[in-house]
Length: 111
Length: 113
Image 1 (tube, rainbow over the protein chains, first blue to last red):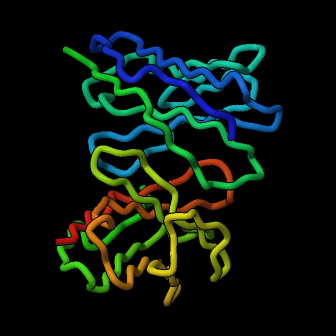
Image 2 (image 1 turned 120 degrees about the vertical axis):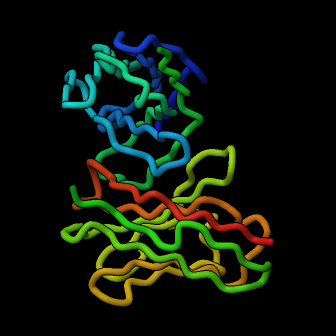
Image 3 (image 1 turned 90 degrees about the vertical axis):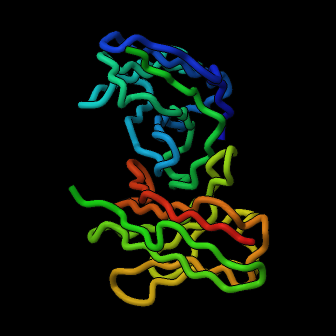
């Protein structure tokens, strides 16, 4: 799997957009970008995934650069409940769900 | 909304004892997983299970660990002889396919004394 690099921590004001970056410069053509988050010590929660096109769902948007070497997860209107560790994971679709979690980004949403 | 449920939420055991952690995956899911997270460390993959057999396992999943789907609903992780370093939060997960969204349970905290 391609390695990912994320900032260890970020702050965001409540109600503002949270933009979480991820670098994956060694990503291969068949590897998807997945985002999960972990609120406190609960089980990780799936957010979104994509290959090369930008993706949006009810939780977030995923913007992948044209060269696919980096991506940004956007929480459009962050709330206090979005305070969590956010993990960017790169995985080939056929490789299954043996996910490799890194250190992630600890997002603190402040009032 | 369907969810993965795990029991117990917290178990304390003595070193050397056997422990069984139980999980009820989402009912129409076919793929089942165990992950663990030692306090303050990363979430680590242990094992994946499909069609009543292990599909993948990590180096952590040694002979002390086993998994079983004893009936149509439960999925269990057994640790035969617990060690201090087995203390961790154990997460069960399930998915419809091998790809896409993985649904995690709330975890079972194991404390080995």
